[in-house]
Length: 169
Image 1 (cartoon, rainbow, N blue to C red):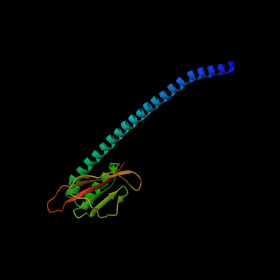
Image 2 (image 1 turned 45 degrees about the vertical axis):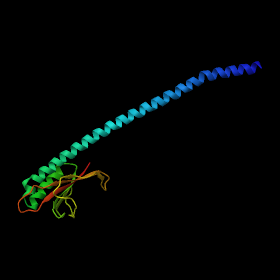
Image 3 (image 1 turned 30 degrees about the horizontal axis):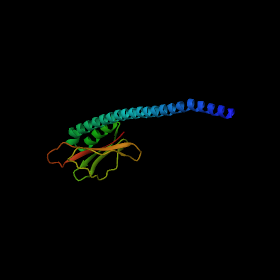
Image 4 (image 1 turned 90 degrees about the vertical axis):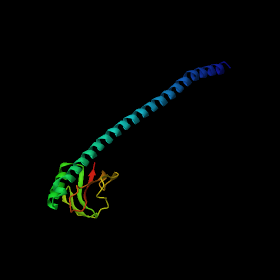
């Protein structure tokens, strides 16, 4: 019986010392896990805000250049050769521009300039009278991409036209 009593006393002492340590360890682990998770979440949110601000700035800058090009006499009143040179300059100067098209009111691409020069023309459905920044999508090369439309300044005796740009980031 003495051995049995000594064993029980030893076991009870060990449990009395171990159980609070185990509870404290579990509580500290839970708290530190939550704090670490909140810290990571806060850092990711801050990084996402910075990326959003950077991309928004790039989009606004590109939109301003596209608007300036659409108002330029080379595009608004010039011939297609003048417009082609203006669009080539735009595509080569600003990295996000992948291609820029001069679109007629009927949706026909009168001119399409890409990074490699003139591109095959297609028919598009954008409204040439409205300024637009389209919803982002992933292009075939898996880059985040947007379509931007900027009406060309009106010239008497010429149908409405617009510049349509594809930008990748």
